[in-house]
Image (cartoon, rainbow, N blue to C red; front, side):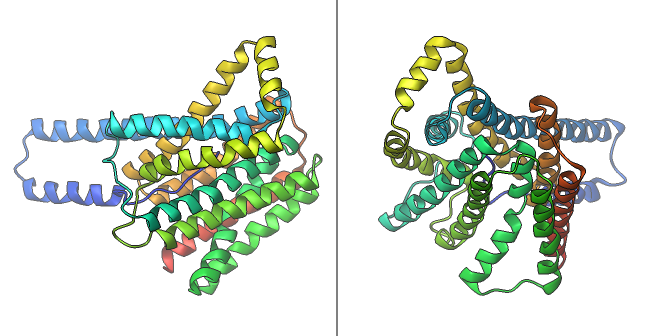
Amino acid sequence: MSSHASYNMRSKSSYENENNKGTVKESGAQSPGKAGKMVSSNNKEFLFICFLVTLWYSSNIGVILLNKYLLSNYGFKFPIFLTMCHMSACSVLSYVSIAFFKVVPQQMIKSRSQFMKIATLSIVFCASVVGGNISLRYLAVSFNQAVGATTPFFTAVFAYLATLKREAWVTYGALVPVVTGVVIASGGEPGFHLFGFIMCLSATAARAFKSVLQGILLSSEGEKLNSMNLLLYMSPIAVIFLLPAALIMEPNVVDVTLALGRENKSMWLLLLLNSVTAYAANLTNFLVTKYTSALTLQVLGNAKGAVAVVISILLFRNPVTFIGMGGYTITVLGVAAYGETKRRFR
């Protein structure tokens, strides 16, 4: 599961500006002891951010690899039920994090209209996660990540169709290598599977559509929710939607899951670990954005995809070609260029 948007975050630059203001006030009058405390405080913050980034990388890459292992190598061929397990964990752990650990203040749903908007987002979100999980049954993680990297392209298309607001032409130009790289990677992918590719592309489009839709539906000040509260309300709705879908479209899921559990007791531990890791990916995504910035998260996300590709190749030994890796590299560089042009020409 990848990834999910965060809102109302305090950026790193604002934090540094506050520190700089405090430093100006005390300049020329700081004692060595105060300077030492400031350095110590900065070091602690840097180590804390490094710790968060490490957890974010581990949880995001971990859930992708665990999904791949369960769906392709373990005989657990139920992507809809697996997504339901993820959403169930997110429901419980989101409530615990907000109600008991006070990670963020709880924001209440204020109207029926707001609830319907959240439900709509939940269904689109489910479609993106289920599609991504289905694609992992047929595609290597490396190729899955290459296709997933085209999210900015779909985001730009949906944003224009929904708002008719144009970006600078140079920004759209940066999307050319994003798409070109995937086309090249597809041609060089030895394990290419058309249905898996279509599902992966659909999941990527749904993920982009959800982010655009979210910006439109929850745009008023009275309806804005941060990502953790949004996950708190979306998750149980997703479970209600996914449970009948799993029972209808995966009718033997209960019997096969119980049989796998009896055959190998680690099955239950693996499923639990996978579900908790899916929640951890959302939580750390929120925290990394809160303590750094959305731009930092985007840069780290580009690097994360490359790390996931390398680890998956080492673990699953899936064959790769120079053409495929070249295409993926072009896509990642295009995504980085797109992010930079959006920052400069906003």
